[in-house]
Length: 338
Image 1 (cartoon, rainbow, N blue to C red):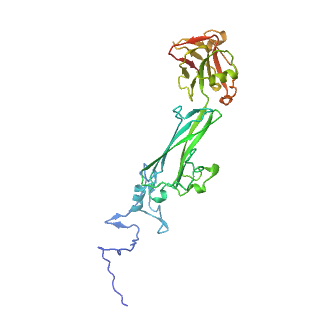
Image 2: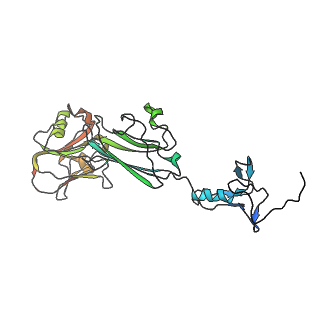
Image 3: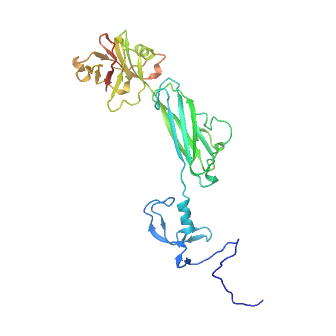
């Protein structure tokens, strides 16, 4: 053994195939630090670097050194180039009978359910490990088989559609559909019961609401009773409108022809009708003059009316009818205004 003066070649540092560690505070190349040090706050979110972040000295949790050090440029670039982007979920539920998210109470519409997913996995650990579409046959509560895995590159777009017949015999009740996905390794095998979608990473929900319709018809009799209301609901000659909101005009229009006593029936919660106009635009009922029996050709049920069987599930209604028999054979619309 002999001592010799060691030499370091600046043209070659380290050994090919082996890691090279350089320690210093700080380490510079050509006078420029290879670490990124800036104690200013990031003024706006930049990719994976959030607004308000800082790269001040000694704030990087260094797993190799086991302590806080300055930020390596490689880690700053990693945060910028490889941000975590959440999957984007969308869900649409439509009752094809009404073209809306509303359905008539007591019916069984086949709801069109369309879900979509755009995912941005950085690696296989962020693939979709399971998904469920609750309220359809794609729900993990009803389907057979194992976890539903979705693999792909960032930007992968996946869609799933289903027809879901649903029923409610109670008015003002909602049926909820939920599209949920897991990108954290959880699968349906560990998820069950009322906790769904507990355990899933992301979800989106939409509702179908069952409501009671508006009706209008010409009837031969004059009674303001539950049986008369049931007759209006069950008549094939009645004009029915499944309307969730009556809009800014606060009005509903009916196009109908016939003769007899003209009836309007609607959910009691809407309150009294303020004005009724005939197809020519003439006011044939004015609530402001109703007590004086002026400007009105109508009477109405003062108490709630519930239709008799088999339509008792429609809930409480209010019914207006003309005091005298009348007829109309034109093509215009009657308008009731609340």
